Length: 81
Image 1 (tube, one colour):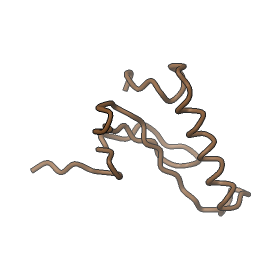
Image 2 (tube, rainbow, N blue to C red):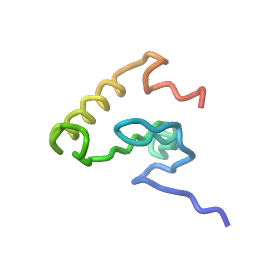
Image 3 (cartoon, rainbow, N blue to C red):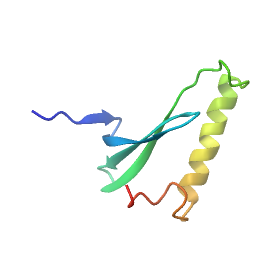
Image 4 (cartoon, rainbow, N blue to C red):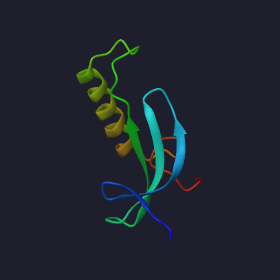
């Protein structure tokens, strides 16, 4: 029996990468029928020099910029994965 891993409405298909802020997953969004990237973040202030609010603001800023970008080197083009 295969069990799908879910994060909200997204079906997680695999891990794309890890970085200083968290983990990025390849996922399917059933609402739009597309493969997307889902980024999770660590909100630990330890070692970052940033407050919780600053970490959240940084994540929201990055998400907004990625979502608005059509450049393939940014977040919107996942065909290569």
